[in-house]
Amino acid sequence: MPGPGEYLPDATEGITRIEDLPKPKISRRSRNFRRQPCPRCGHSAYRHRQAERLLHDLGELVSGRPHDIHLAYSVHCCTKCRKYFNADMSDLALPKSHYTHRVVGLAVRLVVEDGLPYQAASWHLWRDHRVFVPFATLQNWVEAGGKKGRGPHRRRLSRLGPRQVLRLHRRR
Ligand SMILES: [Zn+2]
Image 1 (tube, rainbow, N blue to C red):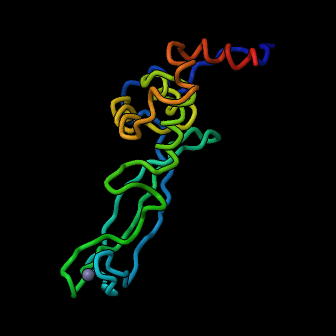
Image 2 (tube, rainbow, N blue to C red):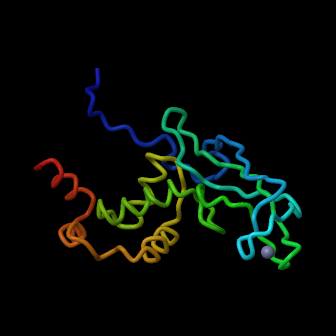
C-alpha cells in the first residue's frame, strides 16, 4: 500500500493536444439591463444591443475541469450625449480582461507574496486551479500592479525558488 506522500503526476501532464484537456464547465451570468444610467451625464439610457464575453475563472479541483463564464451584457446608447457604454460588470472583471478578478488576484499573490517565478506560478494556476494563464500575461498583471520588488516579504524571498520558500514556511 502506498503511503500518503506517494508522488502522482498531474493527470494532464504530457498532454500536447488541446482537445485532450478537460472541457471547461460553463456558467452563464448576466449583466443585461433595459436601462442604465449614463456614466457621463447620468441620463437613463436604453439598451442599444446585447453582447457576450467569455471570462476564465478559477476551476474546481473535484472534477479537475476549468471554469468559464459566459457573460451576457447590454450595450447602451445615451440619447442626450451620444455616449455608448456597457452595463457595469466591474464586480466580475476589468474591462477587456479575459479573466475574473479572482484569477488575477490569486495569480498576483502567487508571485508577490509567495515569490514564485512567472512560469512556476503559471503551472501552479493550471495544476491546482485549472486556469491557464500564459506567464507573459501574468508578468503584465504584476508589472501593471507595480508590486513586484516592493514590500518586506519580497525582499526576503526575492532570491528564493518555490522549494526554498516551502522550506522557509516549514521552519516557522
Ligand atoms: Zn449621457
